Image 1 (cartoon, helix red, strand yellow):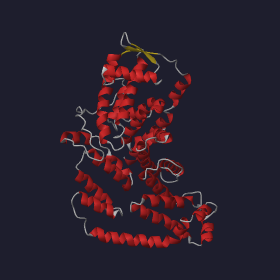
Image 2 (cartoon, helix red, strand yellow):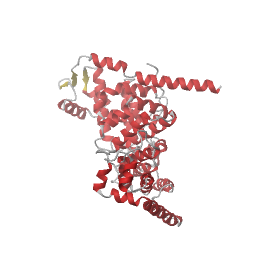
Image 3 (cartoon, rainbow, N blue to C red):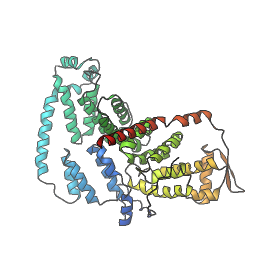
Length: 463
């Protein structure tokens, strides 16, 4: 089984900051801000995000009140210097009481000139794409050459459409960029192998869909993520390059999971499959926070908890936070007091995290359910007073909570009011499930074994 990894000693969390009005940063003391900043993953996440995807994260960071508004704005301005969003940059300067530099005016003129030049190059194709009848004809062509002959355009104009869409994306016109890239992807391809332009178009479409929060439909963010996954599955690029791109894709997936009320179940399966967990172990262990959060927030994934927690335990020396430690305390150590303390710290994590800050109430409710179900597996009769302390609830509140669980068919039990206890009904073991559980981790173990062998081989070669 292995020893429990030594967890870093932490101070007890200070009281959460009072809730602020929507859109306003809560007033935090310096101590509260420092404590929340310890759990902020922004610096670890941003290297794997398109800079446009960083802006909504910075908006969330600013609303959390952890950092000074001016400091966050300065970071935004550094990012904006590498985009074409001149008007937005001017607004940010005005937001901190400064005049926009004169160089922005000159840069705006340069950008408008480049946009006009590129638009003129693709104007004929843009006019075709505005005609619904002609757009319908595009899918009937078997090749780019046939399309170009039918509409009397040059083949170079088709690829130039991607460049124009990228320019619009850089200007912050995500809707127009998304539409242009969709048209491009629907055009006939020269070969089954994706060209660099087609790959760029697919990534650009995914970024636009995430920024527009298009989480449903045929060209939704989730569908585009699956297409990128399929491309990477068959890519003939170096392993290191594929690993990097898959790391990017896993980070992008978080937007579609946590910023949508009803995320696609296939996205969560994608995040939790053995290949994704292996990539997280190798290149981005900080994503184990979100792996743990998905396990807690999504009740349908209970069957994956045991195996996934085993992987989190295996990687605990590399990454640990209250979310992962809560699961380890509960499912590896069976330490319910430690689990309760880590759950209290989880509130601080959620408040400081751009993906989890709107999920704390649901997180707490489901985490309590995990504690209760875990406790029920090893006890047939449970004292309500005692379990209420494990759930960090009052005895009466805990009893009402348990009654609701039983009424909603989430718990096979009954309450003995005379003895103030819960009596569990034992279910017979499922033989088929036991066989599945014994073999589930083979792929992950094999991947980690190969990775360790490669590392050892590289170390020997460097000696």
